[in-house]
Image (cartoon, rainbow, N blue to C red):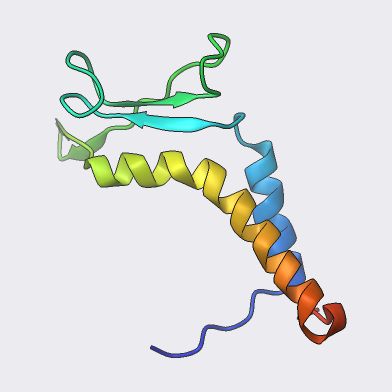
Length: 104
């Protein structure tokens, strides 16, 4: 594996802004037969806050809808919580290393 190019602070700011602009956390994937026994697969937005709509994601192959893999729904749902944590960890590590010198 090659060393990744460092993420410039400006790009990190943009990632953080997109995360803050998204619907409120937590997001949680619900997969039929894994997490509930009837209905569609979906992502619950904002926990038990009934004011937030659930998110339904579809894959299409031609004109036919095909089931979204559970791993994709889990990834999307967890990204809402994971991205802000990862951004915060990058910022923390940058502050610790080299006296806070960043890639600007």
